[in-house]
Figure (spheres, rainbow, N blue to C red):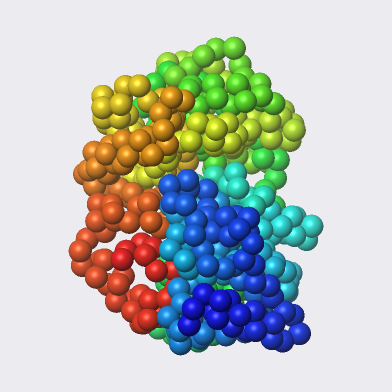
Length: 467
């Protein structure tokens, strides 16, 4: 079939049923839906399909198998590994119109959602029902549930609440063969063989499409309080973390460099937390459920100052102030976006973070002294974001080429520390050449075997994770 015939067939397929979907071919739509937040690969999709039902997705997959048409899943397009980029004439399957909350059980504390439900939409629904969905990140206003699960997104609350997979009671998926599977049926206990849920979570859409998910909810935290500390040295991040965790259950523990905060302040709308400048900052969040917890927090803060770990600090006195302090961390990505940052999302076990970060920082600064390095991340769970900013006078292509040269050195350090080349954004295309730094040859062979079982014709998100 030629391109025109494929598009005509897609329109016919997606029009079936009581809730017809859409097929888009306008150049602006192809550009918008064919990419994610990466800027390395120009999008070149054949068409964009926006289904409304699981059955339409199934029909698309069966058509794609019969005609060897490649399909690329697209959620909120906020990923940073090019996992949702259609760069080779694929058909993009976008879930923007499958965005309904379908069912809610107060007694089970679960909510069944379509894959296109936006993270913030789920969080708001939970709050309206007196509950809490804890998986959170800066892109909560645009990221979609299906994409979050496909990359097993983590975010800022992992230290307390875990990753996305920890909140999944059940999944409905369409496999690469075109089978509809209802996985786990929302059961809390179900020991009947392999739990296929967890193969699709983190698979980056390479095994099939997540069309629905039943998500667990929790009680709403009480009086979340934020403490921002200026640290004397990078190693003090661990000193502070260990000190506070002995007495207080933290809901978040983030860090960012002085350079990162400088960009946020220059971007406007946010004020410095205190006058003292520090090379690094830590942001702690906890539930101040009583006066005693607040007293404990202040005692621990004073202890950290006395030990020379902390230069200054501020604690929120209201929900508004807590939200304002969070902006110091959450606005980093948007404040550096105009500088076309080259991003690496890496991780090690928490105890190894200071030495790990110092080694990578030294390598990057040695080989690229003219590049500005911005560090921030979820240091409480060992996840660091390395951002290299493009000089204004350097072409984007030259900049990316130089950054890819330094990747080898960075990922050799990751391998030596037994870390991950992708902590939460997946492998996609940008991390594909470096997968072997985290996964053994035997593991990769098993991954390919699993792909073959669910997608034998290789039509679902081809070229992602591995070739």
